[in-house]
Image 1 (cartoon, rainbow, N blue to C red):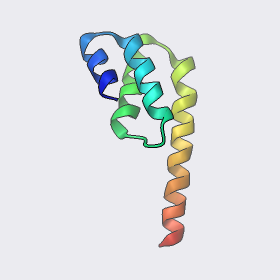
Image 2 (image 1 turned 90 degrees about the vertical axis):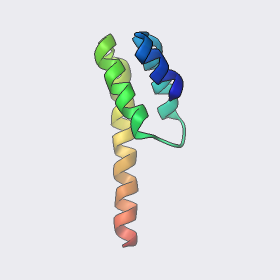
Image 3 (image 1 turned 180 degrees about the vertical axis):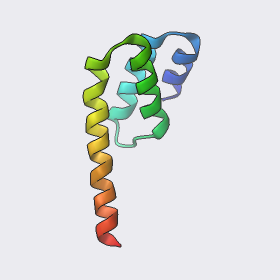
Image 4 (image 1 turned 45 degrees about the vertical axis):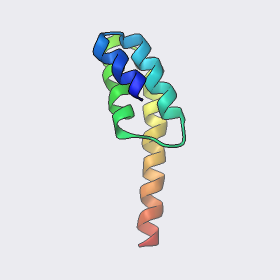
Length: 72
């Protein structure tokens, strides 16, 4: 995630996009990575790469919220 942020700040949007995609593939999904992926996607116009990852992440977050609600 931090490498993605550094690349984004330097204007290396394609590299930032790749870094954020890798960051989101891990088990721990951080909000900064999701936002960074979206911003990098908009700068590079790489919707075809990032949208499936964002969709999968959204679905994972829904499942987690559902499990939390069921426990309460």
